[in-house]
Amino acid sequence: EKGGYASFMLKEIAEQPKAVADTLLGRIDAEGRLRLDEVRIPDAVLREADKIVIIACGTAFHAGLIAKYAIEHWTRIPCEVELASEFRYRDPILGQRTLVIAISQSGETMDTLMALRHAREQGAKVLAVCNTNGATIPRESDAVLYTHAGPEVAVASTKAFLTQLVACYLLALYLGQVRGTQWGDEIHAVVRELARIADEVERVLETMEPVRALARSLADKDTVLFLGRHVGYPVALEGALKLKELAYMHAEGFAAGELKHGPIALIEHDLPVVVVVPSPRGRSVLHDKIVSNIQEIRARGARTIVIAEEGDEAVVPYADHLIRIPATPTLLQPLVSAVPLQVFACELATARGNEVDQPRNLAKSVTVE
Ligand code: M6R
Image 1 (cartoon, protein in one colour):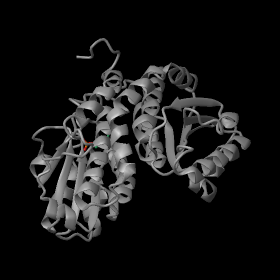
Image 2 (cartoon, protein in one colour):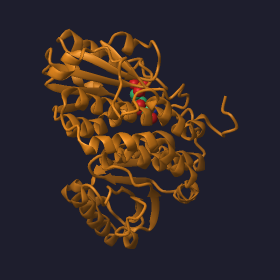
Image 3 (cartoon, helix red, strand yellow):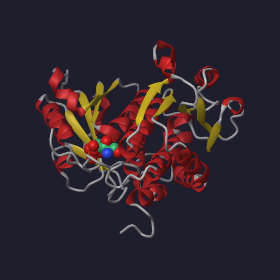
Image 4 (cartoon, helix red, strand yellow):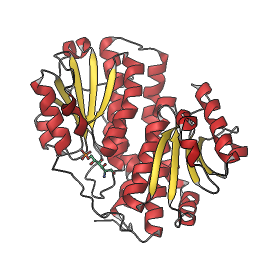
């Protein structure tokens, strides 16, 4: 039941703080160490893994792209992310020391299932990140880390996405812990921040009214572009996917650093461009570069919609619309920056008269290749 919300999607967006908290529950102990006892892959195997390959589709693929940054940073294990539908057709190089992570909300996506079968045939160990107990993908995997988002009914994935991110962060930190790499102050700080992140997501949800108004004002546009860098790049891709599937608009996500290699030619008067700005702390070089990107596109007439941390004043002069998110460690930012994009797409779709829970031509789980 929709519990008083106009759509399942709105309900599921609102459930995200709980979904995130539930996915963390019992997995971090009082000392701040990760406890993933349910991951039945022996520590020895995790210690010896020399490559991680993530396979997934759609929104789960975007979670995988973000996971790559976390895994490589905290574990120093090379990590590839591939669309499950492409994976087995290119003769991928896999072996017994390859750890494959299959991310799927439903656990029934055929492309992901076929990719994981291929990986296991080649001797790789497969760990599923899944939201559905006992689904085919976890049943056919060597181990599973469940997300606890609860049932996701709307076709557009929202709370499952956030919990996939949480599961991937936990996994990355756990791998770091098992392998003894980089287990420093930074990881402790991140674990502490993860414990608070559900409240931060709640705070974002409380400030979404201006985002809704902005979305309604753009209902007659044809195109929206999304820019990001680092983990903000997959967030931009996810923002664009949400808009395509819900609002049936032309939407594209770009890595902001690619602008001058082509996409900047698309910028024209009043084109809405959403920019996900990295934290000015942490990797501040990226922050400064994206601020120049915002300046560049604004000088060419774009209507800039800027998602930036509270306290980031450098963006203010160049933002036609400013959406604030709480400050988080760089790698965790997608947990808060993705939320306004979900709200934005949902509201725009509604303003355009679309059915948000059941967009045209789409099914909740894609059980054919
Ligand atoms: O159930 P899965 O996570 O395997 O589904 C993967 C995609 O089909 C899914 O994320 C799709 O892209 C969503 N409709 C996006 O909102």
